[in-house]
Length: 397
Image (cartoon, rainbow, N blue to C red):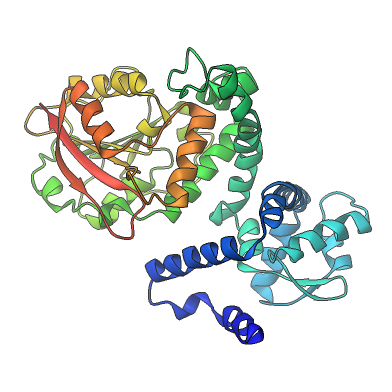
């Protein structure tokens, strides 16, 4: 009976599911199964020593350039197993044989590689993704080491120090500043490598999440627009993926009506995605006066959640000044935290924000209150059953 159950579990493949929603539901069921099967010791061991060991190993192999070489080789000869000697030869720096072996054995024991023989492994979709630049998997890993892990290690003692209050006031108490001496966004501007891993992380997350134009129907937005003026301003838009998705849906739109704004280092140094040249990029700090006046839509995707309410009020005040009442829309696409049954991804994002930016994933009631304080009224809330995030549309009250 036990053997049958194991065989059944081992037989499940991603391709068996009709859509990604079904795959995700099965993944969550597997997570619940693991929580039931593991002993408390196994759970705490996995959270601490397994996690710390695997992160170190994955980054070491990344630093040696082996994941990238493996991805290149697999593209030429898919599924070919690789020996320890071959993998060692791909290293950009000399690495002792047994040192590399010890890390690869750990990585394979947790199924991020497939061990097929003595000192012989096959790649997995996960390991290949670490070698594919366009997947940004390596950036996610590096961002964890640059930001998430150091801040998470400090967070509990930081909260104890400040009497277990929510860190929602960056000037008063901010976990990231305690770890690094600067708030998050100041630090990443001063340290290009850390800024680059963050931008890669954001790009990877954006690729993973549902396209906003599949949650919000942009037909009326475009049809009601005066295209002699700017149509869409993606504020804090990073690589411009959301702007590109609007253009993908409305390919007839002319040049320069879609605009992406972000800090200078983002639109130049850390630009990682090629977007349509009809989309204009502008260096802009959203706490400064908004240069694009009277646009049809001002769009914020996963930007306000990085900031406490007082800072969101400052950024929205600059938008309100340039909006045309009855015409311009404020559109926010973010996690809206449910009162019950929040997903692990939503809660993980919420605590990562707490730890790194003193930010928060807000509830719908919190959003209504915040927008009212800023002088806006919500005119629409748009959800999709497979989307992590919600689109909120607002106008000037």
